[in-house]
Length: 498
Image (tube, rainbow, N blue to C red):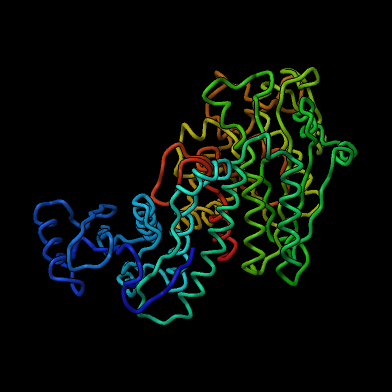
């Protein structure tokens, strides 16, 4: 999609999208008929300027094929996320009406409001437009693909200086396109995306930038390293387990400023604790954490982030076969701790346990953050609009929450009280992969984090549960149903500001 800046509204576009604050009572500078139309709409309460409200019309003396008014709400309540959302609404309206271009005054009326700097204004504008324009059409017939509307051009009125806003538009494009790449991977079915497919995707990313190096640990390497937790999950699958490692060197110093570890279960049947209908069908998405790590490394390199960043992706498949892991089995993790398998469907924490312990032991990152579609409990607690976070590091949590607010890829800290920290202790093993306390289901998202904490000793660490935020069953203003790329934007904002 082409994004252009113009001093005036672009008469080449098919649609005009006009943003109005609820303090505004009239339209100036377009046409008398349109001004009268909007005045009548306001008086009859068809439109008020309330945030998110839309009103479409057509008048004879305006050449655009369609006219859309979007409510911007109160000026003092405008945020970066609201900018993404109103531009997402503009994209959605244009596409739903099968037009391919629009022009808008929204960026211009935001100039001078001090919502954010001009570079960040460009960034969030590009994100709202490009994320909102995404569609997953790969498996449609050619005839149906041709019918899916695509926005080809957005022309934004802008009367300010160009350097900062253009820099922001470029940065936002990189962030949004990396996020859309993650959406594409997560939306793919499990008969396409397996560990071998993701290995090739990671290699392709590494090939694009000389500052990225790529390494893969195959099954024999994992066996030598005694990663029994990861290997145990995969034992029922015909697809090989892998640990992918991407190093991005953007700083002059040695060592890694941050490591991101992403859960990569390419399909989760639940094992012998089989997932039920209405849940199992979407378990191709259980590698969303690994995909988010890959997208983060890609964008960090393209943005020349001045940090050394490590991306680690443990990959396997949780399947049922004559070799599959049983409930009650005991495995030994990379760090030597034994784990009894209380439930074969609590498998993500097992592969992350080995990956976290290995990453810390081998690379000694200052900060280590894992991203995982880990628990249904997090979806129940928080729904789709935020990832859940646990950590003992309050400063790190605060930084991640702030980055989430700015990026729109939100983080909400969950309690991590001392009282929780023995809830994953085993009776005949060091740990159990489900809690044996209480009735066995309380605080599931938190106790999963407790389990992971047992595999981190020195690094500053946070666990991000993206089970709800990674895959939406509802549609947002610039987010489609399905994969969202959750984690990529937040992490990149955090890296750029840190």
